[in-house]
Length: 193
Image (cartoon, rainbow, N blue to C red; front, side, top):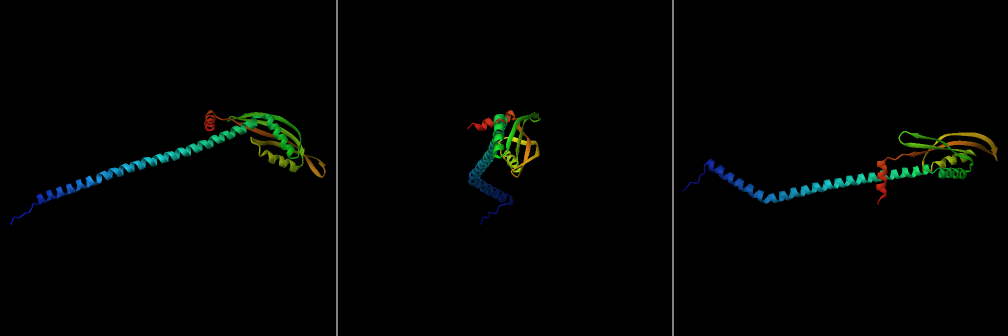
C-alpha cells in the first residue's frame, strides 16, 4: 500500500490552493453583480441628490415668487399713494358713504424717513355723528395703500334731530416705500412669463 500521507506543509499548500480557487470563483461569479450593485447604488445616489436639488430649487423658486408678489403689492400700494387726485376722491367718497358732511380735504405735511420711505399727509375736516365717524375710519382700513391715522380731533357740536353732531379733523398719512434695484429686477422677472 502506498501511503499518501501529505506533510503539514503540503496539506497547507493544498488548502491554500483550494481557498484561492474558491475565492477566484466567488469573485468571478459575484464581481459583475457587485459592480452592478455599486453602479445602481451610485445612480440612486445621483438621482437622490438631483431630486434634493430639484426640491431645493423648487422651494427657492417658490420663495422668489412670493417675494416678487410682495414687491408687486408694494408697487400697487405705492401707486395708490402717489395718485393724490385719486386719494382725495377716494377719501371724499368714503366720507360721503359713511354719511359725513365733508368740509375740506387738503394736503398736509410731507417728510422722508430713513430707509427710503416718503410720507405724504392729507387733512380731512368733516361733521357727523359718532357712528358715521366710526364707519369712516373702518372704511379707511380697506384702502389699497400704506396709510395710518396721524392725529385727529373730535369736537362736539350741536345736536341735530336728536343726534349729537361731532366735528372731525383728521390727518391721514400715506407712505410710499422705496424699492431697491435688486427687488425691482426681481419684480420684472416675475412679470415676464
